[in-house]
Image (cartoon, rainbow, N blue to C red; front, side, top):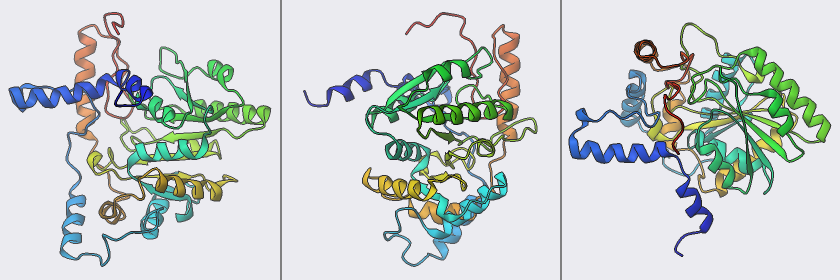
Length: 342
Protein backbone atom coordinates (compact mmCIF):
# COMPACT_ATOMS: atom_id res chain seq x y z
CA UNK A 1 0.00 0.00 0.00
CA UNK A 2 1.52 3.32 -1.10
CA UNK A 3 -0.04 5.63 1.49
CA UNK A 4 -0.86 5.42 5.18
CA UNK A 5 -4.14 3.66 5.91
CA UNK A 6 -5.46 6.49 8.06
CA UNK A 7 -4.67 9.02 5.34
CA UNK A 8 -6.51 6.85 2.81
CA UNK A 9 -9.52 6.70 5.14
CA UNK A 10 -9.48 10.46 5.71
CA UNK A 11 -9.21 11.09 1.96
CA UNK A 12 -12.27 8.94 1.37
CA UNK A 13 -14.19 10.83 4.05
CA UNK A 14 -12.87 14.28 3.17
CA UNK A 15 -14.94 17.29 2.28
CA UNK A 16 -17.26 17.04 -0.71
CA UNK A 17 -16.98 20.83 -0.88
CA UNK A 18 -13.33 20.57 -1.95
CA UNK A 19 -14.17 17.81 -4.43
CA UNK A 20 -16.87 20.04 -5.95
CA UNK A 21 -14.38 22.91 -6.21
CA UNK A 22 -11.87 20.75 -8.11
CA UNK A 23 -14.67 19.47 -10.37
CA UNK A 24 -15.75 23.06 -10.97
CA UNK A 25 -12.26 23.98 -12.18
CA UNK A 26 -12.34 21.09 -14.66
CA UNK A 27 -15.83 22.01 -15.86
CA UNK A 28 -14.82 25.64 -16.39
CA UNK A 29 -11.95 24.53 -18.62
CA UNK A 30 -14.29 22.24 -20.52
CA UNK A 31 -17.37 24.46 -20.85
CA UNK A 32 -16.16 28.00 -20.23
CA UNK A 33 -16.02 30.12 -17.08
CA UNK A 34 -19.30 31.88 -17.91
CA UNK A 35 -21.22 28.59 -18.04
CA UNK A 36 -20.29 27.19 -14.62
CA UNK A 37 -21.61 28.61 -11.34
CA UNK A 38 -19.29 27.49 -8.55
CA UNK A 39 -21.03 27.42 -5.15
CA UNK A 40 -18.43 25.24 -3.44
CA UNK A 41 -15.64 26.96 -1.50
CA UNK A 42 -15.84 30.24 0.38
CA UNK A 43 -13.62 31.77 -2.29
CA UNK A 44 -14.03 35.58 -2.35
CA UNK A 45 -15.14 36.94 -5.72
CA UNK A 46 -14.37 40.54 -4.76
CA UNK A 47 -10.87 41.79 -5.43
CA UNK A 48 -8.56 42.98 -2.63
CA UNK A 49 -8.97 46.65 -1.67
CA UNK A 50 -7.07 49.26 -3.68
CA UNK A 51 -4.89 49.91 -0.63
CA UNK A 52 -3.44 46.41 -1.02
CA UNK A 53 -2.27 47.09 -4.57
CA UNK A 54 -0.93 50.50 -3.55
CA UNK A 55 1.12 48.81 -0.82
CA UNK A 56 2.28 46.11 -3.26
CA UNK A 57 3.49 48.70 -5.79
CA UNK A 58 5.21 50.69 -3.06
CA UNK A 59 7.03 47.59 -1.81
CA UNK A 60 8.10 46.70 -5.35
CA UNK A 61 9.34 50.24 -6.02
CA UNK A 62 11.12 50.56 -2.68
CA UNK A 63 12.21 47.06 -1.61
CA UNK A 64 12.90 46.38 2.04
CA UNK A 65 16.54 45.23 2.43
CA UNK A 66 16.66 41.60 3.49
CA UNK A 67 12.95 41.12 2.86
CA UNK A 68 13.47 37.59 1.54
CA UNK A 69 15.74 36.28 4.27
CA UNK A 70 14.86 34.17 7.28
CA UNK A 71 13.11 36.01 10.08
CA UNK A 72 12.02 35.23 13.65
CA UNK A 73 9.62 32.28 13.45
CA UNK A 74 6.94 34.33 15.19
CA UNK A 75 7.04 36.89 12.38
CA UNK A 76 8.39 40.39 11.97
CA UNK A 77 8.14 42.28 15.28
CA UNK A 78 6.74 45.34 13.47
CA UNK A 79 3.97 43.27 11.88
CA UNK A 80 3.12 41.56 15.14
CA UNK A 81 2.90 44.95 16.82
CA UNK A 82 0.64 46.31 14.06
CA UNK A 83 -1.67 43.31 14.44
CA UNK A 84 -1.66 43.71 18.23
CA UNK A 85 -2.45 47.42 17.97
CA UNK A 86 -5.39 46.76 15.66
CA UNK A 87 -6.71 43.92 17.80
CA UNK A 88 -6.36 46.05 20.93
CA UNK A 89 -8.24 48.89 19.25
CA UNK A 90 -11.09 46.62 18.16
CA UNK A 91 -11.41 44.60 21.37
CA UNK A 92 -10.38 47.14 23.99
CA UNK A 93 -7.89 44.64 25.43
CA UNK A 94 -4.16 45.35 25.89
CA UNK A 95 -2.71 43.09 23.19
CA UNK A 96 1.00 43.48 22.48
CA UNK A 97 3.41 42.00 19.97
CA UNK A 98 4.33 39.37 22.57
CA UNK A 99 0.81 37.92 22.29
CA UNK A 100 0.88 37.46 18.49
CA UNK A 101 2.27 34.79 16.14
CA UNK A 102 2.03 35.39 12.39
CA UNK A 103 0.90 32.27 10.51
CA UNK A 104 0.30 30.87 7.03
CA UNK A 105 -3.41 31.66 7.24
CA UNK A 106 -6.06 30.52 9.70
CA UNK A 107 -5.61 26.85 8.77
CA UNK A 108 -2.00 26.95 9.93
CA UNK A 109 -3.03 28.92 13.02
CA UNK A 110 -5.53 26.23 14.00
CA UNK A 111 -3.08 23.41 13.34
CA UNK A 112 -0.40 25.12 15.42
CA UNK A 113 -2.85 25.69 18.28
CA UNK A 114 -4.08 22.09 18.30
CA UNK A 115 -0.57 20.65 18.10
CA UNK A 116 0.62 22.93 20.90
CA UNK A 117 -2.24 22.09 23.27
CA UNK A 118 -3.18 18.47 22.61
CA UNK A 119 -1.53 15.20 23.49
CA UNK A 120 -2.73 12.14 21.56
CA UNK A 121 -6.16 11.23 22.89
CA UNK A 122 -7.00 14.75 24.05
CA UNK A 123 -10.27 16.15 22.75
CA UNK A 124 -11.05 19.03 20.41
CA UNK A 125 -14.70 20.02 20.77
CA UNK A 126 -16.35 21.21 17.56
CA UNK A 127 -19.66 23.08 17.60
CA UNK A 128 -22.21 22.30 14.87
CA UNK A 129 -22.45 23.50 12.14
CA UNK A 130 -18.74 23.61 11.41
CA UNK A 131 -16.00 23.94 8.81
CA UNK A 132 -15.40 20.34 7.76
CA UNK A 133 -11.59 20.50 7.93
CA UNK A 134 -11.68 20.95 11.73
CA UNK A 135 -12.03 17.18 12.04
CA UNK A 136 -8.84 16.53 10.08
CA UNK A 137 -6.90 19.20 11.93
CA UNK A 138 -7.63 17.26 15.13
CA UNK A 139 -6.79 13.90 13.52
CA UNK A 140 -3.43 15.31 12.36
CA UNK A 141 -2.10 15.17 15.93
CA UNK A 142 -3.92 12.16 17.34
CA UNK A 143 -6.56 14.32 19.02
CA UNK A 144 -10.19 13.20 19.13
CA UNK A 145 -12.81 15.50 17.61
CA UNK A 146 -15.99 15.70 19.70
CA UNK A 147 -18.97 17.13 17.80
CA UNK A 148 -21.72 19.01 19.67
CA UNK A 149 -25.12 19.58 18.07
CA UNK A 150 -27.14 22.75 17.71
CA UNK A 151 -30.75 23.90 17.74
CA UNK A 152 -32.89 24.93 14.78
CA UNK A 153 -31.46 28.45 15.09
CA UNK A 154 -27.91 27.02 14.81
CA UNK A 155 -27.07 27.96 18.40
CA UNK A 156 -24.85 25.22 19.90
CA UNK A 157 -26.50 23.06 22.54
CA UNK A 158 -24.77 23.99 25.80
CA UNK A 159 -26.44 21.14 27.71
CA UNK A 160 -24.95 18.65 25.25
CA UNK A 161 -21.62 20.44 25.46
CA UNK A 162 -21.63 20.13 29.25
CA UNK A 163 -22.24 16.39 28.98
CA UNK A 164 -19.41 15.98 26.47
CA UNK A 165 -16.71 17.97 28.27
CA UNK A 166 -14.34 15.53 29.96
CA UNK A 167 -10.93 15.66 31.68
CA UNK A 168 -9.41 15.14 28.19
CA UNK A 169 -11.15 18.21 26.70
CA UNK A 170 -8.47 20.73 25.76
CA UNK A 171 -9.99 22.94 23.08
CA UNK A 172 -13.44 24.20 22.13
CA UNK A 173 -13.46 25.78 18.66
CA UNK A 174 -15.83 28.74 18.28
CA UNK A 175 -16.43 30.11 14.78
CA UNK A 176 -18.43 33.34 14.63
CA UNK A 177 -19.66 34.61 12.23
CA UNK A 178 -20.18 30.97 11.50
CA UNK A 179 -19.22 29.01 8.41
CA UNK A 180 -21.64 27.80 7.05
CA UNK A 181 -24.68 29.26 8.88
CA UNK A 182 -23.70 32.94 8.95
CA UNK A 183 -24.87 33.15 12.57
CA UNK A 184 -23.14 35.56 14.95
CA UNK A 185 -23.29 34.10 18.44
CA UNK A 186 -24.60 36.79 20.82
CA UNK A 187 -22.69 38.01 23.86
CA UNK A 188 -25.23 36.29 26.12
CA UNK A 189 -24.44 32.90 24.57
CA UNK A 190 -20.70 33.52 24.79
CA UNK A 191 -21.06 34.46 28.46
CA UNK A 192 -22.89 31.19 29.16
CA UNK A 193 -20.26 29.26 27.23
CA UNK A 194 -17.45 30.94 29.17
CA UNK A 195 -19.11 30.18 32.51
CA UNK A 196 -19.47 26.54 31.49
CA UNK A 197 -15.81 26.26 30.44
CA UNK A 198 -14.66 27.79 33.73
CA UNK A 199 -16.86 25.44 35.72
CA UNK A 200 -15.72 22.32 33.86
CA UNK A 201 -12.05 23.38 33.97
CA UNK A 202 -12.30 23.74 37.74
CA UNK A 203 -14.24 20.49 38.10
CA UNK A 204 -11.66 18.52 36.12
CA UNK A 205 -8.60 20.39 37.33
CA UNK A 206 -7.64 21.18 33.73
CA UNK A 207 -7.41 24.15 31.39
CA UNK A 208 -9.94 24.27 28.54
CA UNK A 209 -9.01 26.77 25.84
CA UNK A 210 -11.51 28.54 23.62
CA UNK A 211 -10.01 28.82 20.14
CA UNK A 212 -11.93 31.57 18.38
CA UNK A 213 -11.72 31.10 14.61
CA UNK A 214 -12.43 34.62 13.31
CA UNK A 215 -11.77 35.03 9.56
CA UNK A 216 -15.24 36.57 9.10
CA UNK A 217 -15.03 38.98 12.06
CA UNK A 218 -15.23 42.00 9.74
CA UNK A 219 -17.76 40.51 7.30
CA UNK A 220 -20.85 41.56 9.25
CA UNK A 221 -24.17 43.00 8.06
CA UNK A 222 -27.00 45.27 9.17
CA UNK A 223 -24.82 47.37 11.45
CA UNK A 224 -24.24 44.54 13.91
CA UNK A 225 -21.19 44.59 16.17
CA UNK A 226 -18.88 41.63 16.66
CA UNK A 227 -19.23 40.11 20.17
CA UNK A 228 -15.67 39.41 21.27
CA UNK A 229 -15.39 36.11 23.20
CA UNK A 230 -12.21 37.56 24.70
CA UNK A 231 -14.42 39.82 26.83
CA UNK A 232 -15.87 36.77 28.56
CA UNK A 233 -13.06 34.21 28.73
CA UNK A 234 -9.39 34.80 29.47
CA UNK A 235 -8.25 31.49 28.01
CA UNK A 236 -9.32 32.60 24.53
CA UNK A 237 -6.92 32.14 21.62
CA UNK A 238 -7.72 34.05 18.44
CA UNK A 239 -7.05 32.25 15.16
CA UNK A 240 -7.73 34.24 12.03
CA UNK A 241 -6.53 35.27 8.59
CA UNK A 242 -6.82 38.02 6.00
CA UNK A 243 -8.35 35.60 3.49
CA UNK A 244 -11.78 37.15 3.78
CA UNK A 245 -11.44 40.69 5.16
CA UNK A 246 -8.76 41.57 2.57
CA UNK A 247 -9.83 38.93 0.00
CA UNK A 248 -6.42 37.21 0.06
CA UNK A 249 -7.18 33.49 0.50
CA UNK A 250 -4.41 32.38 -1.84
CA UNK A 251 -1.74 34.40 -0.07
CA UNK A 252 -1.92 32.48 3.23
CA UNK A 253 -1.45 35.18 5.84
CA UNK A 254 -3.01 35.11 9.31
CA UNK A 255 -2.16 35.00 12.98
CA UNK A 256 -2.70 33.51 16.41
CA UNK A 257 -3.19 35.83 19.38
CA UNK A 258 -3.33 34.82 23.04
CA UNK A 259 -5.55 36.78 25.43
CA UNK A 260 -3.32 39.27 27.30
CA UNK A 261 -4.78 38.20 30.65
CA UNK A 262 -4.21 34.48 30.08
CA UNK A 263 -1.88 33.23 32.83
CA UNK A 264 -0.08 30.91 30.42
CA UNK A 265 0.30 33.47 27.60
CA UNK A 266 4.11 33.38 27.51
CA UNK A 267 4.31 29.60 27.60
CA UNK A 268 1.64 29.32 24.91
CA UNK A 269 3.44 31.71 22.57
CA UNK A 270 6.68 29.79 23.02
CA UNK A 271 4.86 26.57 22.11
CA UNK A 272 3.16 28.21 19.12
CA UNK A 273 6.48 29.49 17.79
CA UNK A 274 8.07 26.05 18.19
CA UNK A 275 5.18 24.19 16.55
CA UNK A 276 4.91 26.73 13.75
CA UNK A 277 8.54 25.90 12.95
CA UNK A 278 8.60 22.13 13.32
CA UNK A 279 5.30 21.54 11.55
CA UNK A 280 7.04 22.97 8.50
CA UNK A 281 5.25 26.30 8.24
CA UNK A 282 8.46 27.94 9.63
CA UNK A 283 7.09 31.47 9.31
CA UNK A 284 4.33 33.39 7.58
CA UNK A 285 5.17 34.68 4.07
CA UNK A 286 7.58 37.60 4.31
CA UNK A 287 6.10 39.76 1.55
CA UNK A 288 2.59 39.39 2.93
CA UNK A 289 3.77 40.35 6.40
CA UNK A 290 5.26 43.56 5.00
CA UNK A 291 2.02 44.30 3.14
CA UNK A 292 -0.61 43.58 5.78
CA UNK A 293 1.34 45.55 8.40
CA UNK A 294 -0.17 48.75 7.04
CA UNK A 295 -3.57 47.26 6.16
CA UNK A 296 -4.83 46.26 9.59
CA UNK A 297 -7.63 48.83 9.47
CA UNK A 298 -8.61 48.10 5.85
CA UNK A 299 -11.47 45.78 4.87
CA UNK A 300 -13.19 44.86 1.62
CA UNK A 301 -16.48 46.59 0.89
CA UNK A 302 -19.04 44.22 2.40
CA UNK A 303 -21.97 45.93 0.66
CA UNK A 304 -21.54 43.65 -2.36
CA UNK A 305 -21.87 40.58 -0.15
CA UNK A 306 -24.85 42.08 1.67
CA UNK A 307 -26.65 42.84 -1.60
CA UNK A 308 -26.14 39.25 -2.76
CA UNK A 309 -27.30 37.93 0.61
CA UNK A 310 -30.49 40.00 0.47
CA UNK A 311 -31.25 38.97 -3.12
CA UNK A 312 -30.60 35.26 -2.65
CA UNK A 313 -32.46 35.06 0.66
CA UNK A 314 -35.45 36.69 -0.99
CA UNK A 315 -35.39 34.34 -3.97
CA UNK A 316 -34.98 31.20 -1.86
CA UNK A 317 -37.65 32.23 0.63
CA UNK A 318 -40.13 33.01 -2.15
CA UNK A 319 -39.36 29.59 -3.65
CA UNK A 320 -40.35 27.93 -0.37
CA UNK A 321 -36.93 27.23 1.12
CA UNK A 322 -36.35 27.51 4.84
CA UNK A 323 -33.25 29.70 5.17
CA UNK A 324 -32.05 31.86 8.02
CA UNK A 325 -30.73 35.23 6.91
CA UNK A 326 -26.99 35.29 7.64
CA UNK A 327 -25.73 37.98 9.99
CA UNK A 328 -22.15 37.66 8.78
CA UNK A 329 -19.74 35.70 6.56
CA UNK A 330 -20.84 35.02 2.97
CA UNK A 331 -22.69 31.71 3.00
CA UNK A 332 -26.31 30.65 2.80
CA UNK A 333 -27.29 27.47 4.62
CA UNK A 334 -30.83 26.60 3.47
CA UNK A 335 -32.62 23.49 4.62
CA UNK A 336 -32.54 20.86 1.89
CA UNK A 337 -35.95 19.74 0.60
CA UNK A 338 -34.64 16.15 0.49
CA UNK A 339 -33.14 13.96 3.19
CA UNK A 340 -29.38 13.56 3.45
CA UNK A 341 -28.35 11.08 0.76
CA UNK A 342 -24.75 10.64 1.92
